[in-house]
Length: 309
Image 1 (cartoon, helix red, strand yellow):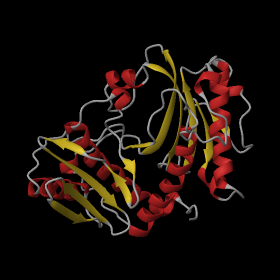
Image 2 (cartoon, rainbow, N blue to C red; image 1 turned 45 degrees about the horizontal axis):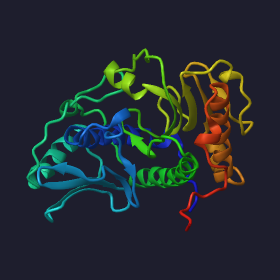
Image 3 (tube, rainbow, N blue to C red; image 1 turned 90 degrees about the horizontal axis):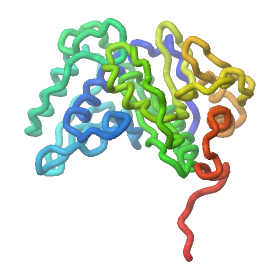
């Protein structure tokens, strides 16, 4: 499996639609699922065909919603055997929102979400959004292929941490795939201020010290897809830390290290290049903040398999 190119200019309109579509589906999961610390009940997950909510409880039933970027359909499957779907095609966010409500009704599911996007400036309510309507199936498929590769490397990185660590999950608010390690210690209150996201959500998400990394596909202001790594709170000296590979750099306006996706994709070993970035930025944050690394980590290359005796 290759790492596909993701030239932002060639698929930005499709990305904008997908961002809004995943927000609609993600909000359904959020509305019906028990709240889990750090918003872990909110994201979507990479699946064998796209993105999935995983199972969502609904009375004595459960259901899940899947973006299928192979057949280019949105599936809703319930535990009572009910199945409904709609085609992923060029359509407005308004139409997608209406169609999703339609397949929910087909399956006997009654849910009301807050119909306004989060974490974006100047949000357009879903029922009114006729601006975003593009869908290029080839580009959506490439995005999923990239997420598959990234999810695999992130999962290996996650497995080497013995402490509290998040799942690898797709946060539909910012449209990024992320995984977060925790030191176990409380953090100072986060200042909040993320556009169209309640400060209490942000402050609970950052209630404890973290080293977090992720992948973000870009936007008009910063069109290059990137990997990122940051720490909260940011330890003194973090911006000056030596990290790998040489193409990684500190982005002061975001307060995080950044590595262009294209550097990883075109390297001789994308897995090793990305892993070097994840490991070196985490090590810098953990060392500068005096984490208990010996008690929290497994060495690179070690697989934590169960052993007899």
